Image 1 (cartoon, rainbow, N blue to C red):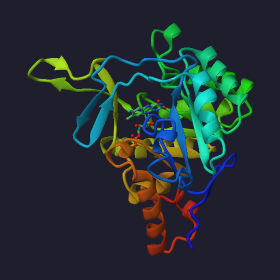
Image 2 (image 1 turned 45 degrees about the vertical axis):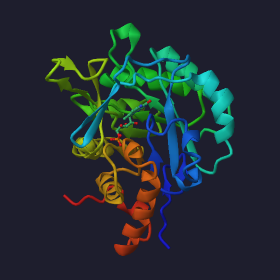
Image 3 (image 1 turned 90 degrees about the vertical axis):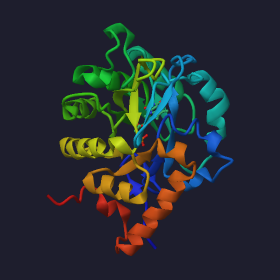
Length: 303
Ligand SMILES: Cc1cc2nc3c(=O)[nH]c(=O)nc-3n(C[C@H](O)[C@H](O)[C@H](O)COP(=O)(O)O)c2cc1C
């Protein structure tokens, strides 16, 4: 038997594979397809306090080995989530993680505080890539001080463990990771999407209604691995890696590089069974390589 479990300190997962925010709905949408309890866990769509319509269409463009999205964090808001969705997820034997958004630091704290009054969440993942309306659209993830303030504010209102999700759209990701850790974040997840643009040469217009969007999928995997490598050496808290994972060997690469667990995003759109296929493949890989505990892989990169 292979032991696929991983221990993040504040949370034990039955396996290291989580479905990533924005690519797995609120979890319930996948219930007809398979048993959610086979997952290590899943992260729900980003939650602001109020419902949001998102950006104007078109909002998705395919690129070679990738996807650019400008969904604009469309969502039902935290009250409807707690009233209508969370009670249906609360009894699941898997880690359910909320993705917390905000237009400013106060909104992150309001959303976190509201979620904390309800049962069923294993952790909060702070999506600090949201544009801050008071700072000209700069997101907290682009600035270590803003990251520190946002995480600290959230930590003051919740006892649910906090994971901070970093943006790759920065020069030095390690300083942002350290700021999140200093403010009390119990884990770091990375990477969110890479700022991108697609153009239609016939119309000479951007392909997305919002002009720019975020690139995800296999095209970004090497960048994500590089950042997991840097961040896992800069902080003591566990790192959850993501970016372009489509197979069990991708997970193995992320873990060797420093990730304690991983998230699978865009691959869910290509194959709704992606996470389950990857978990099965991970067990097969471990068995065929004589690895008894998958957690042994974390940070085992030989340089
Ligand atoms: C359509 C779409 C919507 C997303 N929405 C969110 C979101 O609400 N919150 C968030 O933190 N990340 C969001 N992401 C980013 C993913 O969670 C993930 O960080 C990124 O796509 C990289 O992983 P991947 O290459 O496996 O997709 C979204 C990604 C996509 C493609």
